[in-house]
Amino acid sequence: MKELYLEKPGDLKMIDMAPVPAPMAREVKVRVIYGGICGSDLRVLRGTVPYATYPCRPGHEILGTIVEAGAGSPFKVGTKVVSFPNTYCGTCEFCLQGRTNICANKKAFGVTCDGLFAQEVLLDSEFVMPVPSDLADKRAILVEPFAVNVHALKRTDISKGKSVAVIGCGTEGLLAIALLNHMGADITVLDINPTKMEKARSFNKGIKPLLPSEAKDQLFDVVIEAAGVKASVEQAFQLVKPGGAIISLGISGDPISYPALRITRSEITIYGTIIYTKKDFEDAIALLRDPAFNVSPILSRIDPFAKYQEAFADALTGNFAKIVLDFSQT
Ligand SMILES: NC(=O)c1ccc[n+]([C@@H]2O[C@H](COP(=O)([O-])OP(=O)(O)OC[C@H]3O[C@@H](n4cnc5c(N)ncnc54)[C@H](O)[C@@H]3O)[C@@H](O)[C@H]2O)c1
Ligand SMILES: [Zn+2]
Ligand SMILES: [Zn+2]
Image (tube, rainbow, N blue to C red; front, side, top):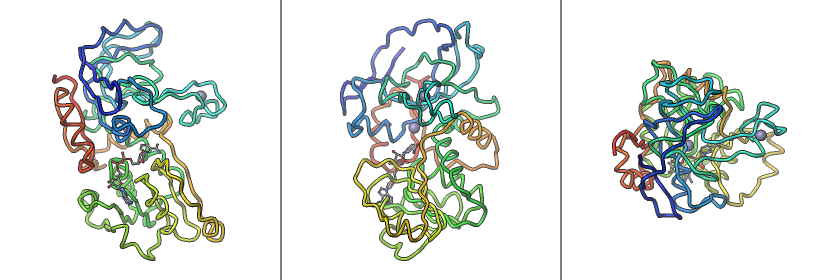
């Protein structure tokens, strides 16, 4: 059995892994099928996440099959599952309100503790969710990144015909666009990379592309900031209509100037949004089960696990959407 190992930023290796112990209590042993490479895996690889710990096994988006279950697990051997990428404590003030996504004690797989890019992993049953047998593996691997947007788009009312601008057409922006398109929103997309905007338009030719430099005085009911850089966050404030809302999804560590006058006088609402709850995972699965829900532009390709170097290198170029590793092929 093999796993990926990141000794320090930039130093990614495939190594033989120690045998995974038998699951105890509520644990399950999962044989990994697919692992999706996420922007946060790339940031940990680059060394730009200040709170990341090394050495570290990367990865958090996996689909796999339970091959052994502890006596206290509610799941049977053979169940196909997707993983949660974060743990939560279940006992803090926020978990007790059902807001496990802002748990005071959460840990992030592949960032603040060992991740899941291995041929077998041990997980607590709390942090896996079964996927229905009629959900294809290629759609099931998108459950986790898609749940981010299922949660984000619940933050404010987005009904049919509302004008929505999505800034940043990376995997997260594209998944937001997939859902907005399904909801019938009037969508404009912004990216500095025209290829990314073309990908967004493959959902629907009615989607309007706009280079950030071209936006001028256009205004939108809702702006979804999904690029996570200083320039895009600041542009979000310029693009939102009076009385409108910004969904702040991108994660930027840069100091951003806060346009207090515009926010106050135009009654702008800013919604922070971070990952999801179990309910969002369930809703993401329900949407992905619907064949009328189009997510095909998201998955760029599936590479054998052995080609992880090429897969990560291509993901780092920023020219692809989701690249997935197939852990059954070494
Ligand atoms: N809130 C959450 O729960 C959550 C979850 C996952 C990811 N994120 C964050 O969301 C952001 C997007 O994630 P991703 O995986 O799609 O990243 P990504 O790097 O794949 O995509 C970012 C996109 O933004 C574009 N971009 C860069 N600068 C821009 C600018 N000035 N204007 C417009 N577009 C610009 C890039 O060309 C790229 O297409 C990141 O900041 C990530 O950390 C947040
Ligand atoms: Zn992810
Ligand atoms: Zn908690």
